[in-house]
Length: 385
Ligand code: PMP
Image 1 (cartoon, rainbow, N blue to C red):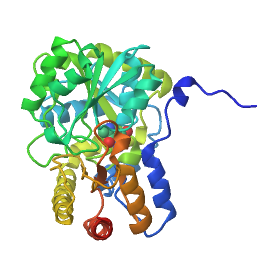
Image 2 (tube, rainbow, N blue to C red):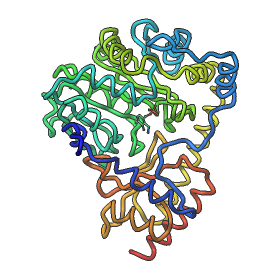
Image 3 (cartoon, helix red, strand yellow):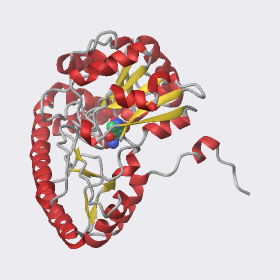
Image 4 (cartoon, protein in one colour):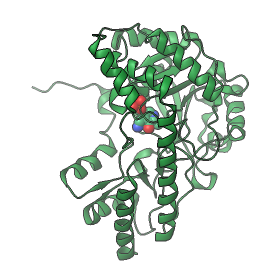
């Protein structure tokens, strides 16, 4: 007997990134520049706070929306860093990673047949999330000529005027692109004019290397039509603790909480203690990690250029997005460089339209390993071009 799977699950293929990790994990000598995960450990103070909470037996559920103290700390942090003003009782929900927050937003806002425009290349979870929620995906490709920033022209070319939602992710995974306030203004105008709700994944907001992060939610008329996602996985190196949050209008956050209270109850309690401490005392740790990422970013960009691979000047997150030589597709290059040189990178096509012809290279890896990986990539390129 076979149990019949739902159409929605069958419509979504397994992750294109995982396949590369699985090959990489089988071989000891492989250097992986494939993962989107900091190589740093969680700052000690945050780990200590988690340990102390366990020692005190703080292992119960919290309020559905997360510990109030943590929501207050998040409200204070986002006000300070990004000029946001969100009410901890009504407009903030703490979730099991930003991933849960994104999923809740899709489920709270998408009806069967609704269209969700996604600026691509983009993080691989949005498209499945839309399909699981019963929506239709509209790809809006960005390109290197525009430094992978979304433009109104791209939205119009894709026919996004009729979209119900628009998903943005800046600083971007996988390209490392950022959007400045002046780039976001026309997008905000488009959203207001066509009554589009914006889902803005800002999980890399701390990781910018050329000026401060700008959020579309702070532009006129946008706060009421934007849901912002952030979390502790990236800047605070807390991926496995699974803690994120969403900020948005009270009715939307309330609807997200209605799903969350049945499906998750509350985000991991130990992680909430760690996150509170991370916001209270780990600012310097975050700064130090950002400095290291920036050093690596500059090294990796300059090495790709030396090797003769064109690479767009990534200014955020911890990825760069070089072009593969013309004789290869992204997938061919990624497979061959893994097989022949033991370097794992992710082919750009898995991130949707606009990604083909590129590789996602993560520099959330120590400089020594990056150095060796680039020696190997250079040997590969010299041999094949
Ligand atoms: N959004 C983006 C753009 C990401 O790159 C990631 C992690 N790779 C996530 C969300 C998920 O983060 P979390 O660990 O908080 O679920």
